[in-house]
Image: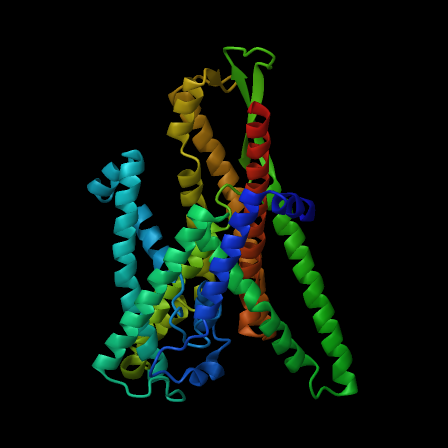
Length: 431
């Protein structure tokens, strides 16, 4: 990885993309420290490690801790993406038609996603502000009222759209997926705070007997992180090779090759989707805290969408599994893959071209998605269970999710850098 980075920095074009990406991430980080007017951000310190705050902090780079103008991060946009993609599955005919129109249809779908993002961001912003302010121990809003909540909702909605725009700039002019890079940057930026928190909890004012327990705890935590990172890296790099035969042999080339499919075809997107999908109902429920906190339906819904509760953990795991299967078929469209193989004059041995190839790829994607979903669900669920059983800090429970996102995005970014380097070598050879 270090060698790839060194070689990439030596190329001006790639170096400019990297510097542009870093510049955008710096702008994003600066925005997370600008507190929304009329907000007492220190009031959130008592719930800084709660499940909802930890989830939203993951998507806003710690912006919710300061209740900054970027506090909502990219969470509304991700939720809007999920809804629009689901509506393309023969639910809304117009969306289905747009999905088949190539680049023109993609622009229309992106526009619909942006409009839906505005609605979701506004609702989430008011919901979370009113919910936190309704808690008896917090005085988040200095002058609560309809006008104040609407103003805060507009500011946070603008911040969410600005964050999404920064992600688009990284995708277009930088390197890597912009939204994923912003989420990863936010997680990495919170690591020093997490280390400082562990230090304060385990070593400050600890007696000699407790000191050894704290050291053992930290050692076990570091070993667990290293094992998870190694496991995630191994699975994310694993490929399944589909043999391909060519009916037309090119000069100087063999008539056989293979098509690589990642074992975890969907990558870390299902984890991001599932986390965002759970955060949205939680923020809406917070608006009902003051009047319905003792209601049965409110307690049931809170338990279902709380990732530290049994119901929430089950729902989170189920969402990861569902989104893994869903996004695998978004990433690899069996119908288009079959058509492309036919156009290239190639086929899979022992499989008829056309519909049979499409069915073969679909069955293979289903089998790979089983492995991928088990892998993602296991890595995301184990820290949550450990946090629930042993009473660890709730933010540590989300460590599996954060590690999945960081490792997955880092591997994809390095893979893209290698592709850019390889493309440059081919262009240089042709010239």
